[in-house]
Image 1 (tube, rainbow, N blue to C red):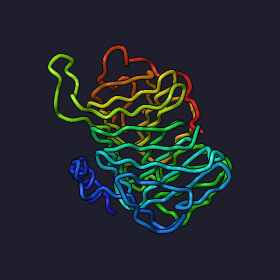
Image 2 (cartoon, helix red, strand yellow):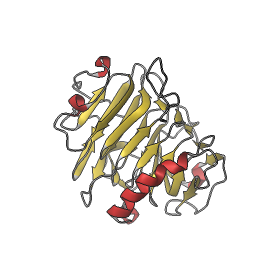
Image 3 (cartoon, rainbow, N blue to C red):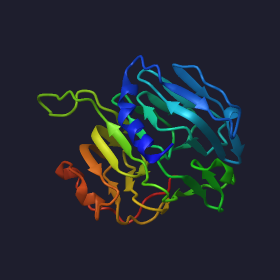
Amino acid sequence: MTPSWRRLVLRLLPVLFAPACAFAQVKTDGTVGPRTTLTGPNFNITPSLGTSVGPNLFHSFEAFNIAQGQTATFTGPPSIHNILARVTGGPSAIDGTLACSIPGANLYLINPAGVIFGPSATLDLHGSFAVTTADYVKLSDGGQFHASDPSKNVLTSAAPAAFGFLGRQKPAAIEVRGTTGIDPITQLPTHAPTLEVQPGLALTIVGGDLTIAGGTLRAPEGRINLQAVGSAGEVIVGQTPSTGTAVMPSSMSLGAMIPAAVAAAARSLSAPARCRRRARSSMPAVD
């Protein structure tokens, strides 16, 4: 998909947020498991659809879109610690529930073409959550899980260590968007997405331009990590924040955009005063 077509598709993705959306689809691409189209509204994503290597479970999708009222649930044995789910066929629109039934398992959603969370998007997870438009995830022993070029996969049992951007084109955006309805008293959207992880865990968003419009991010007693990327390189899981990084309070409800080229992302947020805190000195790993 060319950059111009990718931008066009991202602009059109909000049409996916209709309750009866005909485009909602979860379809594997056959690269790490069988090629199949799952049946909704409750998409059951079993280990047999991917490849397990030690505590890592790898999935690959041609399409991954969840409409309002739908749920996509990743399942597996308790020995799985990390689920890495890449999308290779175009942008993703999430307006339903993204779930994982494995106790303590972290979920990584990787789509280099872009991701939009709609007004009804929610998380039902027992581990940390990371969404990225990186081209690949680098594992701590040098292995790689490529989304832009699956032929370069080196799947191992090591924990995710970095999100890699090749720089062939500007990294795609990630958006968390609410509806246009405004409560006359609170002046907040009347129906907005809430992306929340369980207490003490991490919620991480790493991509090109990051937009949070009327949505809420929550990580009670945990950490919210935002990083906007504008060029080639690797974002190390757990590294000290640098230019383009904001480590936020454990709850955010705002309308903001973090451009990939900002000089100091924490200062770029149009947020309530309680959310304008200086980036902390470290980011917890999501492994």
